[in-house]
Length: 70
Image (cartoon, rainbow, N blue to C red; front, top):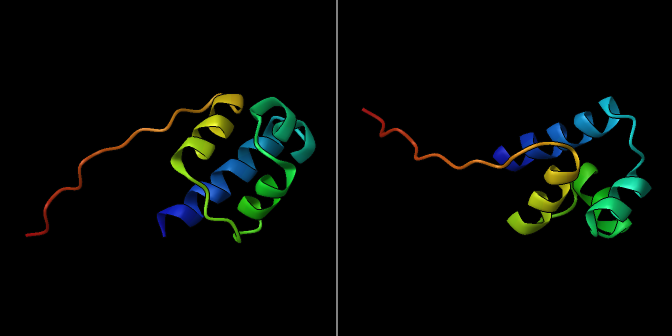
C-alpha cells in the first residue's frame, strides 16, 4: 500500500516539475527502465533508488514509527 503511494507521488511530482522520465533517469543515475517500472507499478525499488529519485525531485524520504493500535 505504501509503495503504491510512493510510486504515485514520484510520478505526480515529476510531471509537476515537467521532467521527462529520461531526464529523471539521467539526473538520478537510475536507469530509464527502472523509472518506467516504478511509475508503472511494476518495479520493486530499493530505498536507495527511491532516495536518488526523490533527491532530484526536491523531495525527502522520512521514516516514522507507527503508533500502536489500541
